Image (cartoon, rainbow, N blue to C red; front, side, top):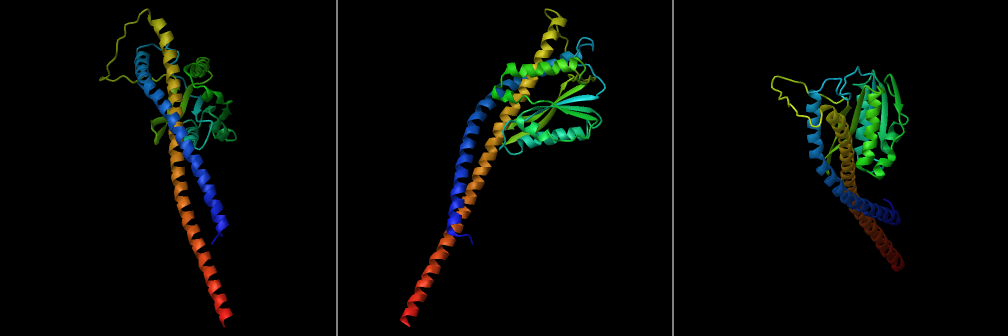
Length: 292
């Protein structure tokens, strides 16, 4: 059994760790509230705009919508969204796993490029050897999490749209954590470009839009704006998921530290009781020796 000093040091260490994890949990809870409000307000608007986008795309010819042109998929860009910091459970690792699964299965015969949004995914994929035809890892835009605004998200979306229009990529996919609640996040991989047009069936209700001022001007403005909002929504989703995952992880860490502290305290009490009993036996034995 460890001596009393070692157990006391461990109790002190666990207590310090518990205070840190508890503080981090409260900080994440405060940040989660703001991030959750932002994504809750954005989701209905983004989803409705996405619905309009898909319906509009289905009514356009391929020549009228340059963002919906289907090509043979040879060059793929995967935008992986993680955080800059850890201590959030499997939040970052789940995105990395999803990307590796996509590369190994769906895109195994394609030329893969990865745009890592967040320091953690950049560190995880920096020395990864891909089994695809060829691969490339771009410099990660780490600073976007320092100032997550629609303007900064739009700059990234514009660069992705320009790369697709130039024919640099045949498909662009965004992999991120979708926020469900503080304890639950789901990893999604969404096709960003080309815009997916819903398949028309006999039961499909085709919406006949009236364009004002003109169809060309509406398409020119609406589709890029909807794509910017779609990417911004994914970033907000990931941002809220990060704080939810970190709050949950720190809550579990605090509970584990509390249980460990109780076990160490019990061990300390047993060791102290054993030491006291041993001293009493030594005193009694010495007294009997002197008496004899």
